[in-house]
Length: 293
Image (cartoon, rainbow, N blue to C red; front, side, top):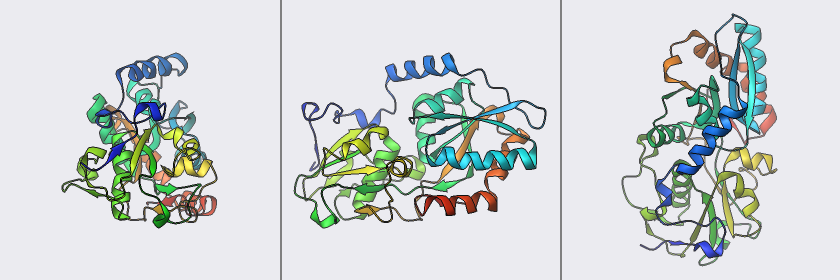
């Protein structure tokens, strides 16, 4: 094995061996259950009967886009929507599974499938929404070839997004992974799957909301599009390395499995996949977000 982890003493949230394959810790799961039940009223959803759909999003592009979707959904389908904003990637699925939300719109398909496998959530994904290229940013270097030997790189600590970054680094020629990695089928890469690491890169695994702040402390950080956008970073213009539009990490709308055949689900997807929403995305986000419909 040629890859190296930063020891815990080097960073308060540095990678712990074996932690990559755990999606959420038991304690975090308990916190999520308490937090969601404590402040979200039980969701009751239907189409056109005056009740309100509670839709969870993360702040940033997902929230802004869903404000546009909300207008279309109410105007064209009579859906009343309340948007609930979250600051992390943990609570929206926990809240949805608990019935505190009717739907959420914040994640790509591989992330949802990882959550379902790890937590046993009874959730289903519908409707392609957008792709937000994950990218490698640095405050210290302007080009990828300037990264030094043993550079510290911060990456997301969840299997889906962490594995996504490792595939990006492999594409950029920085590392080589073992054969058989396929995020579409749920085979995510971890740092344990690195078979070649010629520069001796060291990886610091952090929760996604902390990656932007880590730019002051590491040589480079791999940051999701929504957090990059909120920090004023554009993956097309400002990064050392970024995914292309061919990325398999397409975002979607998730609902409880038992609701997947409800009429409002398809109405919500149709409201999202309109020219009006597409035009809003293209105008507002300047390539940070790419419509996938």
